[in-house]
Image (cartoon, rainbow over all chains, first blue to last red; front, side, top):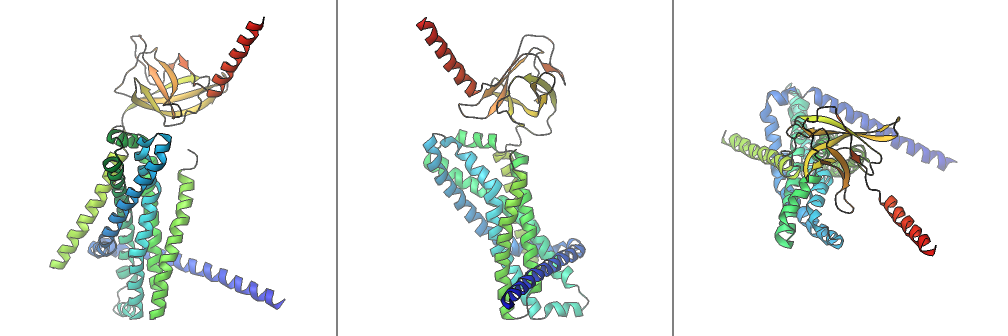
Length: 263
Length: 159
């Protein structure tokens, strides 16, 4: 009997603390949005963060995009040639990149490349009491530190996802047309026929914006919420990567279910 | 100060590449330029006995050229036929007695509407209804017809 109540107690404690944390994170997001005015008045703050979150992620995004596209080209050709429809390779590469792989893989890379860096930076700022020092000088750390990083992430993510998709299409073109020798005309024309701007490209961009918001939100919150110890910061960094990767995959399923159901 | 300028430059390059990639996706992959959503169109309706697997946004072609898109598919409760509304680009004018067929791209491809122009001198206007239509070929009906004919032939021979 005691074991059962103990188990239920622990379960209840887990659930309430999770809900509590979610509520805290939501209020934190609200506070960030309310204090975003400064980021746009002094846009150089955001520009600086776009450099760290976006520009420094450029190499990994472009190289991964190229390789994902080339692998799609090889694998797609291998399957399509069995049905004698290797000219549909362009459709396969473009649709899978624009709809799914571009936003999702770019989001995962962004979470591990930029999200973890944001969490570690903010966590360390908190551990070394820089945030407290700012408050002492009547500078709101949320407006000065959190909001610019949040907006930089939200702006960078769709751009990175678009670069990933474009690079992937180029990689698919390199392997499909240049290496294997699929007809160049049908590669592009079938792709252009099948890919719809609103249905596919715009939905992909919407996805990447949503992922950008989710990843940066999680990253800044985990950093701000991290216990001010070395252990705490490292734990928060790990949690950022794990939580935002899972969130991206879950959100992707939900968005896909809404966007591409039946139709 | 130099540092700040270099930073701005890099961010500028980053944003330019990002927007360039988006533009590439829109124009080269999505082919937005050739059939833009804002092009002026006029709406034409047609009744079909059976539309097969025709879907919204399916192309409307004439002589193999895409001239429009299917906008709406509805069921007419009075005639028990399918009413298909499709928009045609204003640049392409068709005679009033144009006929519409539902065709299939390849053996297993998606279905589209094929228009063949008639000889009338008056042109189609917005809201007009096409009189001559031909339904989609449903493979099952075709096979059953074929089998039925075979059976009928067989009966004739035995008589």
